[in-house]
Image (cartoon, rainbow, N blue to C red):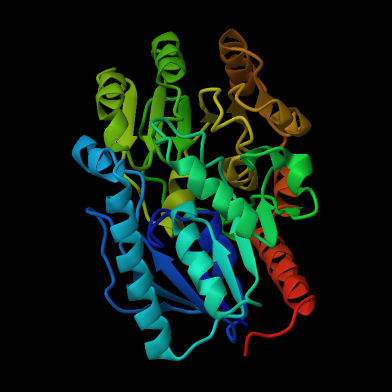
Length: 379
């Protein structure tokens, strides 16, 4: 199977749902992964092969913090020019490698109008919209993005999502297209014994968050935790977005808050081993309301008790395996409970095993296979 994936994030950006799913596809699949350009990451003018994925960078419209660039992107002719350049670039690449995709997966809605042109070339090409977040839920989302979202929803033959609330439309309108594919965890890696424990010397208890620090991060809640537990160490591991650097620095000015830049994926377990409690401190908004975070399963696979914020009411279904708060005050109470009464590690690991990425990846690929079986080939 040849899969063309048009992504909104870099392949090398952390280890997200996309990488986890695609890296487990069979070796005889060909995955052409098109990533956006980025200032602080390597950009690939030609395919880099990380079996079974081939990664190439093609500049396209994307969310940025620079107000000057955003001002330009508000102009329709600028977006049209970028779209034209990206379309020509992609067409040249596809012609040069002489690969006709069997299925196109779209997770960057800004490619939607290019996809419509591709469909004119290959009318039978099935399109999958991988909707892992609400694309309209991010702060400072430009108004013109709604056009691309609507176009994507109309083009899609199938919509895969970890939660129906991620889909930025009336779910009933697209019910026949939607397939739920949960987030997950690399159970074997997170359940393995650490090779080292670089944080063991920190004052305890260690209250840990692993993941990106961005607009969805609840800085006030974490500040309350640090100020209440002055003898503890609050550890944040992961990248800090430019848009929240001022808020992050104010938090890091507290003496018992420690930030560690992103660590290699295969080393995360070494750091988690030192955690007494793990937290998921997300603010409650349109972006986080449908989120079932990967880290919920990762913490559980590591045998670590989790305290989660009250951002998604559906998290209650995991209340047997995590302390799910109902308010800011309840978050503090649940944190005290987690520190004094950690949940049984065997129960946590048993739950995580049901969400192993091997299972999730097979489920996702099975949906692609079923979609292909229902329509004639492009070849």
